[in-house]
Image (cartoon, rainbow, N blue to C red):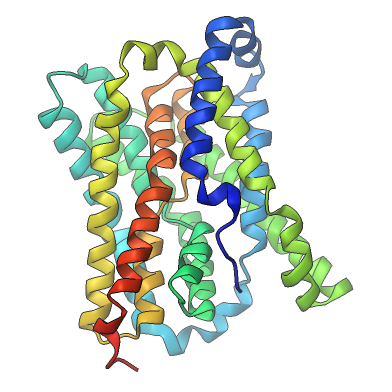
Amino acid sequence: MKQGIGFFEKYLTLWVALCIAAGIAIGKLFPFVPRTLGKLEYANVSAPVAILIWLMIYPMMLKVDFRSIRNVSGQAKGLIVTCVTNWLIKPFTMFAFAFFFLFIIFGRWIDAGLAAEYLSGAVLLGAAPCTAMVFVWSYLTKGDPAYTLVQVAINDLIILVAFAPIVALLLGVGGIGIPMDTLLLSVLLFVVIPLAAGIITRRVVTKRRGAAWFEEVFIHKFDNVTVAGLLLTLVILFSFQGETILANPLHIAMIAVPLVVQTLFIFFIAYGWARAWKLPHSIAAPAGMIGASNFFELAVAVAISLFGLQSGAALATVVGVLVEVPVMLLLVRIANGTKHWFSENR
């Protein structure tokens, strides 16, 4: 699957910054907008935001072909690197980095209650490794597309069963109580349903028009839907977050520090491990990328469901969106610049 980075994705950080400004302005100048939207919720889930999040996640799930798992036997080492890094290392190092920076390094400037909310958002990011943008990062590093597809398919299956328990465990360790029913509902709404819809759509469309048409034409009809849904969600989110941001503008930078450190750390763990195992660069690069990047759409959705649109957790997940693209493009350059490290690997 070839996929270059599009205009909106390439400048996603700029669009996110503009949406932050627009959302804050709406919340300040037209306060009735967030008040009205805040009433449209069920079981702590905002209906308008849920619709936008489905628009974000459904196109991503269309790209996952679970038939690719049949080829898993020839890529076992790469998948071990991916799965261990994503699920046995990444969530726990994210918790450690976030706790260290938010409570110890920046503790004098951040109220403990707010720091706990930021920590919650960081944990949600750490427990949600990338399932879609990794196709872009893999393409930019000339990664093996078949391996990337298998990697994403297996990762989505693991998210179904591991995301909620890991989040509950880490937030429990941090002394942050969460309603398990809301967490499980979030996984159902924002993982299970879109994944099932993607699988059904793929089967129906492929049966009628063929696999080639599905991959080359149908999927691309949704190219801008995900980004549009994300940006509209951010406008709504920041219409609620305006007062918090205006009162604590430096908090954005302080939240970003552990997220950036975590991204770099996880990339080099997976990338270095792949090199030590003598895997080819076309496997090592996407293995590093999927752990380093986040399924931030899911993290944003669950943060809003669990803690609300006005929460520090929701704000932290959006900071993850803000820093992800520039940091990941940096890692793409690093991966491409170190390809000669793997020249002997076949």
